[in-house]
Amino acid sequence: MFDTLSDRLQAALSDVRSRGTLSEDDVAKAMRAIRLALLEADVNFQVVKRFTAQVKERAQGAEVLGALNPGQQVVKLVDEELTTLMGGAGRDLVFASRPPTVVLMAGLQGSGKTTACAKLARHLREEHGKNVALAACDVYRPAAVDQLVRVGAQAGATVYEQGTDRDPVDIAEWALGRARSEGRDVLIVDTSGRLHVDEALMAELARIKKGTKPHNVLLVVDAMTGQDAVGVAQAFAQTADFDGVILSKLDGDARGGAALSVKAVTGKPILYASTGEKLDAFERFHPDRMAQRILGMGDVLTLVEKAERQFDEGRAEELERKIRRQEFTFDDFLEQLKQLRGMGPLGSLLKMIPGMGQQLNGIDIDDRELDRVQAIITSMTPEERANPSLLNGSRRRRVARGSGTNVQAVNQLVKQFGQMQKMMRQLSSGRMPSLGQLTGR
Image (cartoon, rainbow, N blue to C red; front, side, top):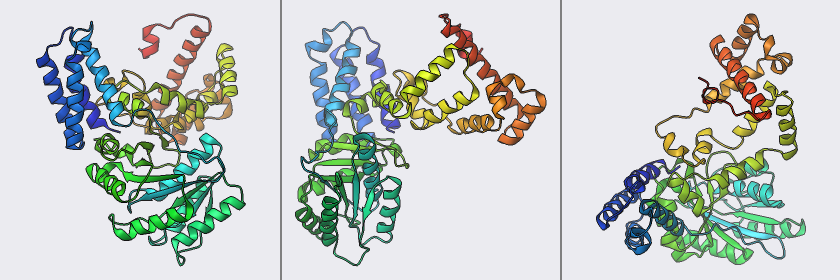
């Protein structure tokens, strides 16, 4: 996510970051590099122009040139201006005082709108405890209704559908009546997309909007299309009022042009971002956290939130007791591994730790290695997982065959687990492990 933009901006700021003093020429040079990085990231030209002018004006003021650490001050200014550019504080949906809250979803074909409906439904159910229903009003795209029924079921939401032979406005109004009578908290209306913005699309949206009186109108745009996505958002903003944006396919966007341009161009905030193919790869968009990620400053708050969703507090206390009693087993390790994987790709998680982004630059974090570790552990018997000392030569050969690996891989995992247990024993007794133990050397 934004890897190219992040690399370019960090490179542009690397020189000023370490300087003890800064001249106006130093600031101007940094601004030229930032301007080029943003333009290469497909950020709107007018947005780049305003952004760099604002940063330069602040950077050449007394708050930077007279500061004790002017280089860090410039980085701080860029962080603040990036946050402002993407919308300032993160926002959420407006919920109705009397349910159901109606959310109308709009977007072009191929933007990921139907999947975004299911992801939003799951998010509202998991994060807000809402009882969510989906209305299948995309009657033109082949199999769109079937797709919504399938992904809606996966999201734990009820889907109201009447096939493809009825007017989408009638379906939306009927679905709203059912949502009211069945006491649903939220109704998400999946509307038809088009290959481009046209009068027929806008007229139909206007009719559905009039019939359902939605509390939120969200536009789904494909982040990977860069300036095209911004153009779509701008066209919608000019002809059909909407409240916020969902950026889909943000995980595949190495440049970041859409995320950095859409708020400035349309005036509408980005509310949510889709960060992967799975339904749980969906999160609120926090401009301040995204700016910190882009600048390689990490995103500890999002990391903590992901961990809180995955790790059970009671189980964590039990695990702590096991560690103190030196009873930590391969089963416990496997459980922790599964919970860690539930938080998302390992590379993305590591980059949320401040300072790790630059250290991981150019290093490929292969999640398949975790698959191999999991395969080795599950190929052990319960007795072997509880007591690894039972793993003699013949047992290790059996585990290697069962996991599709080799004896060397099994030996390495058992050795690393032994070192982990040793460090845990030292930590539980109040001793700090040596650097060699921490690095495995």
